[in-house]
Image 1 (cartoon, one colour):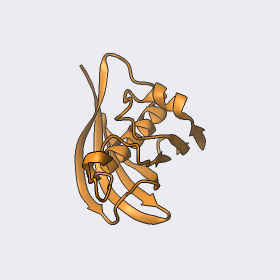
Image 2 (cartoon, one colour; image 1 turned 90 degrees about the vertical axis):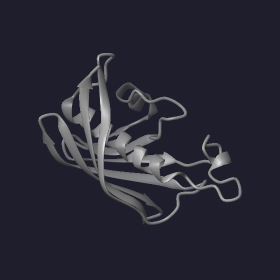
Image 3 (tube, helix red, strand yellow; image 1 turned 135 degrees about the vertical axis):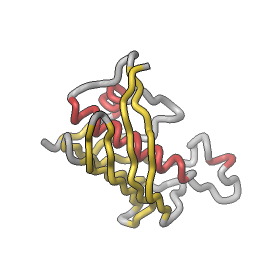
Length: 148
């Protein structure tokens, strides 16, 4: 199955809200396998005035967070569930993060996340962020869901 998600469906599947919601649209999702999502990066992002006023760059940790949010969407779609008030989806690990190019206002960040393992509630993903076909960042990330 290869489906899209608009912002309304994304908000149903992620607990994040402005200014920390970093996914604007899901272009495709194949539950249990992969997701392709996008983040439109605008000069109005709340982090740009301080990072950096003379040369605005999206912080690398937020690029990684956007990948983790895409991974969470993939997990929820794979499980056929949505977050509830009793559980929290945690970002628990990152390996091999590399930043290849800065992400700046006007860029459209394409997030490609592939599920590589799901064992005993620990999900592992291979994640790639691109801008105009150029790799901006890569990482292996791990997430889990826990009761509060």
